[in-house]
Image (cartoon, rainbow, N blue to C red; front, top):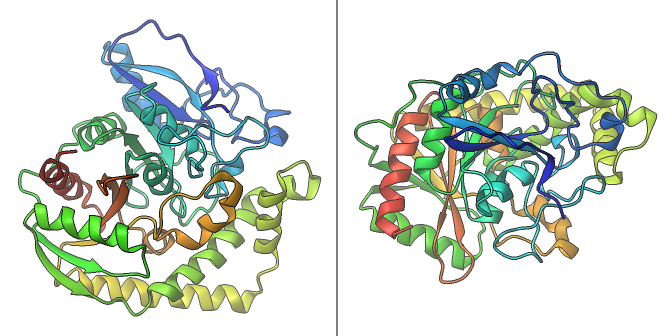
Length: 369
């Protein structure tokens, strides 16, 4: 089992930062967690744009890069199981999936091998492994963090964000991605509660955490949630096929990834048009919601992480993809259950990361995390 694809012995000081191996780092090959990509990968000639703040902090002795971390191949999967580079060990329970696709990012911070890790999130790929490994992860607003120099999966959904063991760690990670980033002075207190068909243990844990934080809660129903999820699957599949079609046609990918890519290539123009129309209706529904509340609260996963031998169930329990379709930010943070932690997902309007992390801090303090 392997968290790391490339370990680095950086003699510097400061925050230990791990980088998902679909982000270019000068002098190192980018594998995207794929043997087929690694076979012909050349050392990157330049850093991805999102590393600029980290490099400045590194030069100032405030951060050091400890390596490039593993992922679900091509970032196209939710389990984190990787047949080529090994499957990172879930720090909570080695028998459970680490979650994907940013599996190595979550396990690096969850095991204490890094203070901050960068991941990508196209359909939940930061929040799902954060939930599986009991850490905090932030999906940023689409377009807020540059994707230049990042291996593409789905251009209209891809985002970059940080993972850490707590909200303060995520704040430090965001300040590296975006120098000057800081939490809002006052967290939002008006929160809409979306209820999905969720394990009652998780529902109770989320309700308890929100209650402990003394928030103004309103019950919310979102008509287009389910349709937005299906539309997101179509759009992600079509865009992933466009990005990685040559790899799928050449063979040499993991069976699960190749199957998902080929399904994306089978979508008709009418299916794509319908998915785009549903996405537009979904965005309109959310825009109306933001006039009533500041933050939406729901589970990140509808059940506890699956055992590795039953990993196929993970696709059915994620509650993340509609958020990518909307392009809005979301923070996943653990809340206690008495056993494995549940994961609370806080979703806000575009550009509201500062307010989400402020609310995350309040909830974290209330539950004693």
